[in-house]
Image 1: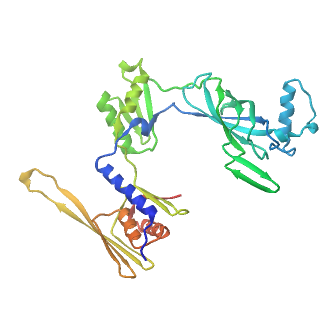
Image 2: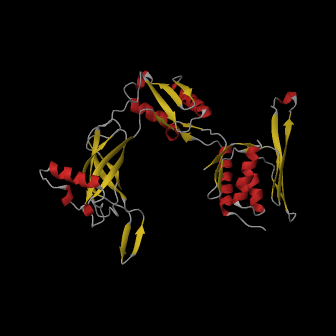
Length: 369
């Protein structure tokens, strides 16, 4: 039986593109693979009440909603007994937000509002002024405004329809920043870069690139940190110096990795994944990968260098005596291509990759998600 597995064809195309890029060295800006330490967002959280709901708010079983209403009204000089309240038009909510770096008092940020009780919907509701606090307990923003849920819920006579979640929504520019979070980029004349994906090779390449541009001012502290001494001429122009650093390009390096999603049968791999000589049998399917090493030694007078090449042949046999020959290579791509050609399912491919890894022939980190 022969059939094309579309997802693996897509992966094969991606892997092919990666190969072409790898041959020409993929370069990325430093700003895309690292960030300056001290420049980060901060999480804010708050509690509040959403009013104006059309009977879709919390029931009277949610006592903290009733207590919140009583306390709010008391702050306005209104005293009311909790037993008199029917909070069906009001909902207790939790409010979350990200406070970006360098925002100033008076700037606005987006907030997310989520039901904390048993409200059926926040559609059409308005959040009453609520303070947002950071982990240190200080108030950094105040949120208020109409909630947009991005969906709907409707029903009558026992029939109902719903699209997306209606118990959570956002308020665009719904919070006003009240105070700035101090940002410290420089420490004793040094700045530090944190790599998004720690890697010794990438950290070393970043160091070499910066030193080539500015002189010996950078050093890799570890796989995830590069420390840079700010030159004297940039002491009063730190922003300009960091901008110049971020625009430099390097060739990032990563470990070989194969990511497998067993639930969906998806396999994603990098082009630097390799496999040793190995034979695999899966049901009526037989795959054999053989490799040999050739050494090309130039004559002494030519001044050339010794070149070592690896030749690989891949044979695939099915119970119907189908035979497929692939170009010389030794990668997971060859195995996936061979399996796809004889009609293997994604589940078969995942099982085979796991077995090759267990045999010690797969030189990559096999990650299951």
